[in-house]
Image 1 (cartoon, rainbow, N blue to C red):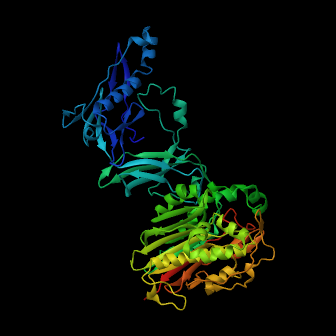
Image 2: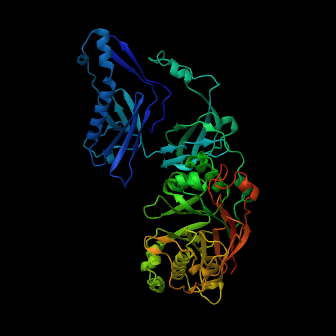
Length: 616
C-alpha cells in the first residue's frame, strides 16, 4: 500500500525451458518505517502486481528478514508457472523450481546478515531480490491511510480523513477527479498477457477528469451520478513520498439546496479580530437518539427517515460548523464515532483541536473545539455531576441537605450528566485565561429542582477551579477586573427556559429556598419514589453571568415544544459581547414543519456570539 504503481510493467516471456524476467532500468522503492517508540519495523516493496508488507523485530538479524523476503518471492514467482509449464510441455508441476536470492548492499558493499535490522536498513541502501533491485527509503513522507465519506452530496464539502506519517499537510499535494463515463474508456495495456480476457473490464473503466487541486472538495451539480477519486502525494522538507489514491464507494447525490445556516454564514465569513473570539454552542442531536422508534414516530414524524440518518446529517453538520469560522465550538450530544471519524479530521483542517468527555457507558458526550491560533490548552478538569455531589468537599452542605430527600439525592448521584471543563490560555495575551464549561442537564420537564441541584453542583466546582487557577479568588460583593486572571464561559443545553429558577440563579447569582422550581406540581416518579423535596434551599455563586445571545424566541423547535434551552453565559467582569449572529427566521425553521429537517441537522439551533476581552 506504500508504493505507487510503476508505469513500466514487468513482463514474463516463455523462451524454451526458461522464464526471463524483463524489468525497467528505473529502480523501485523499498519503504522502511522505523520509529523509536515501536519495537518492530515495517518493510514494504512491490513484487509483480502485488504489494509485499513485512513487520519485523528491530533486534532480529538482517538474515532473518532476508530469508522471509526470499520465501515470499519464491512463493510468488513459482505460483501458477509450474502448472502452466506442465500443461504446455507435459511436465509435472514439481519439475521446475526457481532459485531466488536476496541481499542488501550499502555503498556497493554487502551488508552482513548478522547485523540487526534497525542498523542494516539505511537510507539509500539497495535491496536485491533475484533480478529486482529496490532503493531503500527510510521514513519517507507517507500516506498511512485515506478514508472518504460513504455518502456525498453536491454542494457539501468532502473532508478526507487523511493520516500522514513524516509528511506535512501543507507541503503535500492533492488532486480530485470526477468520473466521466461519457469520455473515452481506458485503452488496454500493451504487453498484457490477459489483455483479451480483461478487455470487457477495461472497457468499463471510467475516464477521470480533474476537478480540483485542493485538499477539500465541494462537489458540483455536474458531479451528480459520478464517483470521485482522491490522489495525495505526501511531501515534507523537499522529500516526496509515494502517491496514494482512493475512489469513493458512492456516487455524488443531489443535495437539499440552500440551507438556512448558509444565510448565517454571511455574518461569519471573516475570522474574529485580535482581542475577540467567536463562540458557538450547539446540541447537534446524537445519532443514538435520532434513529429510535420514538424519534421516527413521535418526536420527529415530519422528518423524512433518510434525513435522520447520520450519513446525511453529518454532511450538513460539517458544512455548518466549518462555515461559522468559530474560535470555540461547544457541542452537546456528540457521538464518540462522530467526534473521532468526522469532527476531528474536518475541524483539524480548519485549525481547530478538540477534546471529548463521554457520559459513562453512553455513546455520546460533550465536546469542545478551540482554534489553535487563538488558544492553547492548559488542562481539562472534567467531572461527573453525581460523583462531584457525593465526594467533592465544596458540595458537603448540599449533600447534607439532600440527605432528607433520598429519592432526589439518588437521582442526581446516579445520573450520567457531566460537566466538561477546559482551561485555555490566550495566544495573543497569555495573561488571559478562559475556563470553558460545557454541560447538558437532565431533560425531564417535571424536574426543574433536579436541574437546580445539578447547576448548583457545577457552580461550586467551577468556583473551586477558577479560584485554584487565579491570582485572587472570585468575590460575591463586586467585580474588579484584576481580582481574577480567569474568565468563565458556561455553555450548554440547560433544558431550562428563561423563566426558570436555574436561569435566575445564573443571572442574579442567587435563588431562594422558596422558589417554585423546588416544588414542581407534578414531580417525576422513579423506582425510588416521587422526586420531591422536603424543603428548598438558598443557593448563590460568585460569578457575574449574562446570556451572550440574549433571549431568542427559541433554540429548540420540535413538533410538541418550542423554547429557549441553550445558552452562552459569559463572565461580565472580563468579557463583553461584540456581536450576536442572527437566528434563522421563523419561516426558515417552519418551512419543513419543525426540526430536524432536510436542511436542519438537529432539533436545536446553534447559538453564536462574538465575545471580546475587556481592557484592564
